[in-house]
Length: 176
Image (cartoon, rainbow, N blue to C red; front, side, top):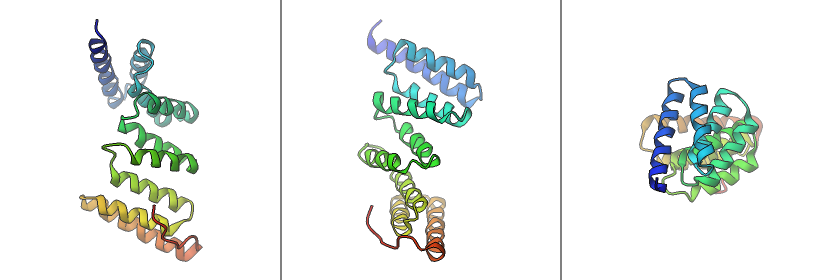
């Protein structure tokens, strides 16, 4: 079997695992993903999916973190890992690591800039840097084509303005 054949076979198993997750058959999906990694420990997409399962379904955040790191190491072009890992770091309030991941994601071809700048906005808002958050939400709007997303970002901007008036915080509009 050639390496290309092996990759295609493992990718087919990966897609089966993805469908199992969608169908709520988490244990079966985990078995398939772990089988992929036993055969090819560099199959980064499998690490991402395991990270998502451990984060969302099992709430085992340390294990999820480890899997996301391995996914980024072995499949740095796989966009889903960036989005998933951003959410984990944000939820855990690990803002320095989140900032580093956002900077890394900026350089990835195909990354969704609307989502990326929204994540910057959330980061800055959580840190009380309301001016920077507003700048980030505005950049997300510039990149957006969907009116619902634009309306959501406008609400985020209004929320930051209200928070700024209530709590002070950074009013500086340093560019992100």
